[in-house]
Structure formats: C-alpha cells, structure tokens
Length: 367
Image (cartoon, rainbow, N blue to C red; front, side, top):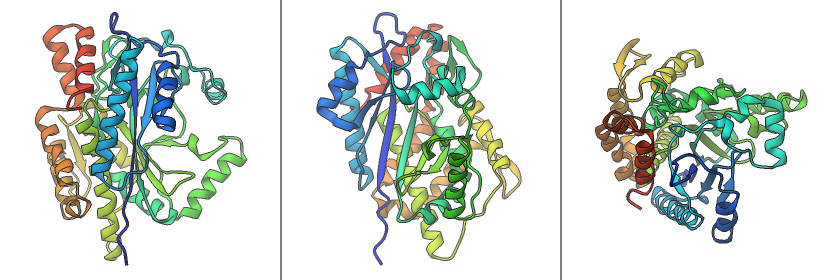
C-alpha cells in the first residue's frame, strides 16, 4: 500500500507598513491587484485594508513549500516597495489602533462586521495557517482529535505578538486574546466520527448560526470543503525559516499519528479544558514558561516538552525529507520566539518604531 503524501499548503497574513510613520497603512488593493497579475489566486485582500494574505499552492513536500513561501515573500515585499510600503510579519502591530484602519469593501466582510460588530472591527491580527492533506474526512476527524494535544506546543513556538495599541501586554501572544472574541474559536471539541462533525456543521447552518463551515475558526479544523487538516493556532512568524520549521513539525505530527494508527496504536485523548490550560500558558509565557504534562500530572518547562515533541516525530522526518526543517526548531529555542526578540529590541531602545523596523528586517531575512 502506497504511503500517503501529506501535502502541504501555507497561508501567511502580512502587515502593510508606512515607511515614514511605521504605522499600518492601507494598500488600497494596489498590492493585491498588482500581485494577481503575477500570482493569480495566491494573493488576496483580508478584512482590514492593511492586511495582505499570500498562500502557496498544494506542495508535495517541505522543500517545495519552502521554495514557494520564500518566493511569495519576495514578491509581496517587491510589490509593496513599488507602492511605497513595507511588509511586516508579526501577530499584531506594536502600536496601530484598529479604530484607524479601514475595512475592505466586500459583501462577505460586511456580513461579518454586521454580525460581530467591534469584535470584527478590532480583529486587527495576523496569523499563519498550514494545511496538511489527508486521504479521507474520517482520518481528518481522527487527526483533529489527536493533534489537539500538541497545539499549545506549536503555538508557544509561534508567539510573536507581545504589543497591542502601543502597550506591552504581558503576553507573548496577545493576538490569540483578541481573536478569542470571535465565536467558534480555540481548541476544538472531540468528535467521534466525520459524520458527527458534519452533523454539527449542518446543524449550525440549518439554525442560522453560520452560512458555511468556514465560519468555524478553531485552532485546528478539518476543512469543510477539502480533505485537509488546517492548523490555525499560530501567530504570523517573523522569518520564512521559522514558518517552514513549524509547517514541517505540523506535517510530521500528522505522519506520526498516522503511523501509530496503522500500527493499531492510538495517542491518548485529553479533555479540551485541560489542553486550554496549556494554551493559556503558551499565550502568556511562550517558550519561557511551563506547561502541564498530563500523563505525569506535573508542570514541565515548555522547552523540555518541545524537545520531547521533536523526539516523538523523529522516526518520520527522514521519510518526509524534513529533518533539516524540523531541527530548525532547536535554533528557535536558542534565539527565542518572535515575541522574545521584539521585546528585546524594545528593552534596548524603548521605541516601538524601532520594533517595527526590526520586524520589517526579519520579514525579509534569508530570502
């Protein structure tokens, strides 16, 4: 029997920055319209006009994903430069106010704002989403149940939003606190089967809660239309290398859980309420704190748990061709998360504009 490929797709949401003020500035669709001539559907507008999203096509392996992520970053930086803007990759802007940022004119966004009001208007946050392809929706629900446990570990590595509206928030990821105002967010529930999951979506549609499954904004979801498991928990990452490393870890976790399953082994399931404890710690402390090892029922340094995660997937990364990318996590542990590095610049300079300059520089690092 042929092994599944576990294809990859990576979406990144970038900030468009005024090079003089360092504030967010609307790209007035110039980047999107210019980009679509070159990149077609790989670039699109988001709800706020100072956000531009790019996404890879379906990638067969991490090497192809790396090539596309680097190419897309290069293209969007070049397009922004042509219209006098800079591109920044972080989960929040250090000092912009959402009240000052215009909303993109679009029927879909109009409906969201009408329903969610200031929760939508204030959702000026930037994330990275990673899709991993699966053979069946049944397998997708199995993955969703098993992978939930690892979301705080991945999230801790991604933390890159310590500032909000000019304030140091005390969180390594304040982005997740902002996004929690939306309904249907956070760690997903456990579902017994794909049919139970589909019945849940159908009930929400029938009762007018949502018009389609894309309005389920969990940290991890089985995509409503495609056979992919979609990780949505991460802040936008500073460097392309970091984004690729976490995508490689996400793919490796899927491959590992699959390997256990076909060997008639299962990963232990934990309650959403327990996983939420670790997610909160990840948001607050990033990789600098502790999380709970529920098997041992004790607190363990987050860095130790991340090293254990790398050991857990070690036997699948060579088959995936992703050892180098996964092992970049060791460098991330060494240099600190994006939040750690943003805070270091702020401690050194006391100037949030210099933090923006740092984010802009890191966004193009290694391209």
